[in-house]
Length: 390
Image 1 (cartoon, rainbow, N blue to C red):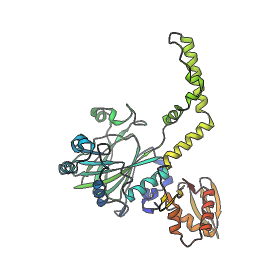
Image 2 (cartoon, helix red, strand yellow; image 1 turned 30 degrees about the vertical axis):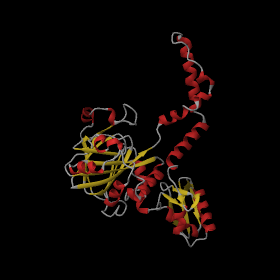
Image 3 (tube, helix red, strand yellow; image 1 turned 180 degrees about the vertical axis):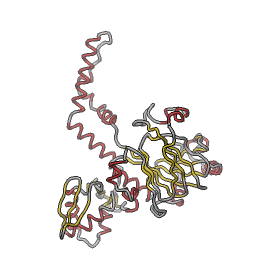
Image 4 (cartoon, rainbow, N blue to C red; image 1 turned 180 degrees about the horizontal axis):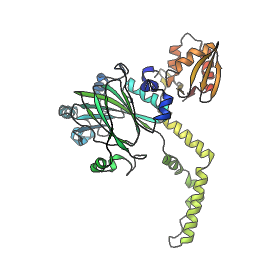
């Protein structure tokens, strides 16, 4: 799991994570040119070809095809809901764009990268893959319901970013791009705000709701996208659905609609009770726990053949730094400052290279350190707030 190359900080480099969160995240696009070698070895054509060879993985739900801006009905390449690779090849020969959704767990590089983003943002993160071909438009101008990080793996692709940003889209009818006809998007996307040609090593961040479209300008283009989906306000209301029936007031019948005074009085009492529930510190704490669970429960840390689940650690990279002060070392985190013993410094420096690591990653990197000393140092870094057990 530990991979400095697949860390959130490496994605943003040379932009600092603190600056990204302060000025760009959830606000505006950020284009970060990178060297060709930035993602070398992270993902390549072999990974894509291997993915497509997996049996019983691809179906009409997670594999999409578009040709010249028009979606190809899945029934044409997934008869009976299952992918027919011969038909897939025929459409690709015609210039179709291929989109694989939820593919982040099917290669080591994309898996490590998605979990690193998840650890850094505290939000659920899923990965998609796009293969497109020169002069054949893929998806028409649209907006997404999640923030998107685009990583160009191979070839070149030109992105048009439009002026309009749909306010706080979510995957509910009337609030995502598929809710609207094509002419709505053409009329509302606005003028081109930025034109960006991405080459291997480049990164593009697009906040949710921002209209965009892309076109391959090389014979073939391969890029990955990672969608970031934080919890929304209505998730808090959703959490109340299972709670409200425990209060007798919500189990009462609503007064007859012709008894206006009684009807209004009852609904007013419901509103007051709902406000009390939503303001309950215990329920707020439960919501924080639920957000944490959604973000970190999908991060497994198994070390078979040992049957127990090993600890995984999230590194609070943003707001953390290690500096030398004379003969001592000072660790600063979002929770304060502390002095580090000399033997803890290499481990803190190592941890700051990643957003996420497992206990096995750590012991492999420091196999010459006594396990008890290693555990003691981990306790110090946890108490200091640099790392968090998930």
